[in-house]
Length: 294
Image 1 (cartoon, rainbow, N blue to C red):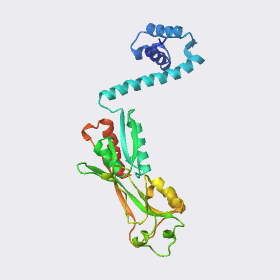
Image 2 (spheres, rainbow, N blue to C red):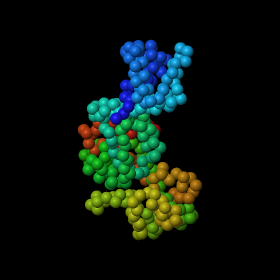
Image 3 (spheres, rainbow, N blue to C red):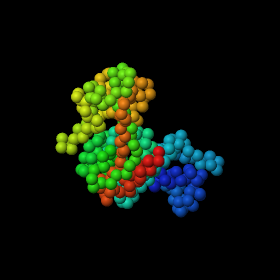
Image 4 (cartoon, rainbow, N blue to C red):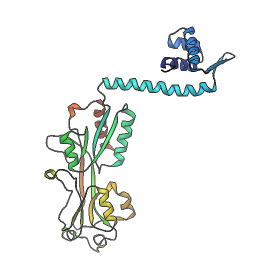
């Protein structure tokens, strides 16, 4: 059994905060003698002296200084615990799951998460990275509370959040990059193409972008594709925002095409079951919608 109670620590800190028993008694609406008794009992139960009187001032002992710091944290934790119970009573979700398309800009995501962290009232977040039809599966199965997806399936409303530019990239020494003249799609088809696949059910299987190369390797994410390109093999359409450093240093370079080879992908916010979304989920969804101005 614990030797002390939260009430005793509240009284202890109130006496210190108010500079003595008289002001603390008025603050707590309790008698002077009851507070004095509570502090005396607390020190007796713990077997240590916490405060002493010097002249007309109440001072903390060395042990009292340590106990005050720890007790303040203890009281803050207790208040937070009761607050969480209150939020749960209001329907505030203890945990939310986000299915996040992996090309979603990290700068926007970080801003949204920072805002939610300050307002989320202890709600935990689980973020699952998905690609293409992986987001659609999360919507159909309602396995996530919020889904960021490039594909808004029929029957679900999507809010456009941002548009990602996809560039056809290859290693700086690749023939498609070093060519003296812009290449056309016929020339592209003669080289190894790295394709991003969502790895979902075959009937719903989706591969990204132009698929006319005679040789194709399929990988499960953009970073696997990047590693292959850096080795000097193949070309691939990759999100510009994920590989700005490789592009800036010239390690990977866009292929100069006679036709417009850039692709643009709009990412949407979809709430699979809006009727089940509680206060925390609604707030997080609004933070994502507000991110459109970032």
